[in-house]
Image (tube, rainbow, N blue to C red):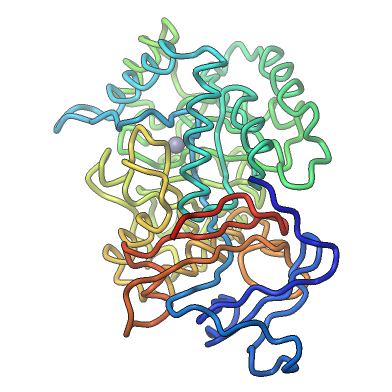
Length: 418
Ligand SMILES: [Zn+2]
């Protein structure tokens, strides 16, 4: 659905407007012109002749939600359960088999459409996606979402670095999106255990991506592999690539493995980051790396997640991601925020900030989105809450609250029937 905002400014009001960068406004409004927000304020301050009808009780107006780690291509109808005690790499092998069985462009496009519809329906307007081909970029383009989509690369070999195929794939992937107003292509070296430093460096040199998205410190065996010790990663490589590899230069942790090759920088977004030391976190902070935190996926696959207060005390930026639908039951970022809130004892306001402004900062997009402020893009969601007598942030997080209208760049991309 596309309803273009009229050229002349128009107003959306709600019982509570949550600008995020400042306190909630009761009986507030937003004035939009074209693709931007031009005014945020209280209805009572509008001249009487231009004041709209009083907003409906229980309505909330917020920035669109930002999902910082996603694999849209994995939007199968059900999760791929990991059996208790099963190594994570065995689960990854099952994911690879499933994706290979259903790998036609039509099948991928179908899954991407179903995932993108779910994102819009649950109030997500901006994504940080990882893809194996052009399908998710095309679907996000058609459905009007915003964000970064990174081409995933696997190249654990350090001895024979032939990246020509990946570079050609990346150039084809970027075609048509070089100057796109909402979508930015990026590169995703899968992880320090699946891409050698030599290949990683050569890829960055050849592709010059503006965003880099990786999986970092997700499970214990990563560090074992990078130290040159036996781990289940040798079996993973043997099964998928037909041989095993040794790390290029042994390191004590995945963060150190990247740091010693100057691969930590403010273009890098690191997903998961469960296993880090205080030194690792300080190193990530110094280099401006941001973190995509996926609590539900981490709990389902590893039985644990990162300790958010450690990251926040280190001054790191932390956004929320659902991960792919093979490890989480849905792509609803509010469910992710509820999980994080319980895990880390966040306030409702902290959980809401993690879904919006912190997410935008994680993706380096906070000058454009993440809060309702004049000059920012009109990416916003109108919600209808049933729960009353609680703070507007708690209303937003409540399970019974539903999105009723989702706008991106001033255009309505989804409308609910509440
Ligand atoms: Zn992932």
